[in-house]
Amino acid sequence: MSAVPQDTTKFIRAPDVIPIYNLVVKQVTRLNAIRDERNEAHATLNPGSSTSKSPPHESNRVDQVLADVFSLLSLFFLTIGKSRETPATYCQIASMRQILSYMNESGAYSEQFLIPFRERQGQLKQLITQDSAEGKHPEPIVRLMLRKLEGVEHQLDDLFESLTVLSVELVPIHQRLVQLRKQLSALAAEPKPNKQEYKAILEELRKIDSKRVDGKFLGPGGSSVPEGQALLSGLLETCFEITQDIKAREAEEDVSPSLKPIYESYVLSLREIDTMRVDGKFVDADGNKAEGQYALMFLLRRCYGLIYRLMSESEPISEELLPIANKLSTIKKCLNEVLKYGGPYTPRDLYPYHLALHQIDSLRKDGKFYADDGSIPEGQAILVAQLSEAHELLEMLKESMSEGESDGE
Image: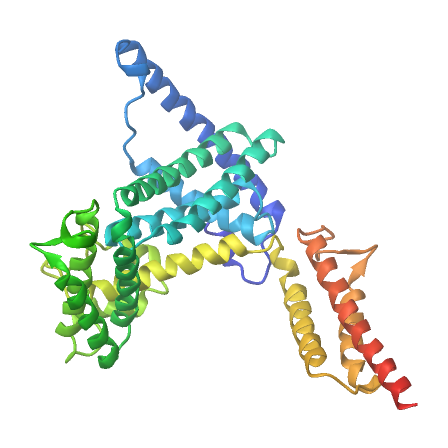
């Protein structure tokens, strides 16, 4: 699989990917059979256990290799324009799990941050279930993806549940602390944090802290101690830790030297960097927690967030058709700008757009865009829709041009 994308002179096509996918399906089927057999043996030996639950599966080397394989396979499916199919969901699911893990570690989340993940989890589940009902992909693959998605569902359930212990009286304070924590994370990621912004946030944190009596946030009138104290106290302490981290490196350049190689290379080796953490922390050569933790964690989470967003919003267009799609997108932007600023226009003004669209139209045969090998790549409907939209924009400009001429008469 790693060898497939190395030849940069050729596009990755479905015939390159599907045979590999079929081999993966066979291995996953075998793995499921082995694990099912183990679970059945456990149930036989422990008939009295509650509902004969199978033993918890511990991740091993096989699972790690399987994760690597599906990460590549998922990206291949995205590349060939099959982003709305079950195998393509793997990278999105993995990214969601990483982001939710960071939210849990930092405690910086609120219901409004979690709702989009819940909605996306539901959409992915519907996609996988629909593929299963239509028989698009084998049962072992569907089963594997649903199991991975269940992990995301459990993470979301835990995060939502942690918010249920928060009393209504404390919700405004919690939401403000989440916002401050986000601002501090962004501030910590800057090479030279803004001192005025830092002081303003620190002052607000101190004001919030001063509202506590004997370490507790009190309800209206100061007669009750609302639920959710631990959640707020933990988040407040985390915010103060970040301010201390920023203060400690005020006189230093960027991140501390022991973490600088990580800081500079995170964009190129995101996964490798993530595995460098020990108990969720980056350590120096002596195994000690080094300065700059929050800057790196913020950037790491931000990368996963961007990757997740790009994958979840990606259109199902094959790599071979992307140059055409990009060109159409550029033409549409230009036409929209021209339309926005108004005329008058002359045929000479609109000629370059006519020519560009004619060139794209001429690439079609029988209404379809073909690959070099004669195959029909994914993404035909999207390109046709974009092309039609561009033609409509051009017609609108021509119409406004004719109206201008009639007004002149």
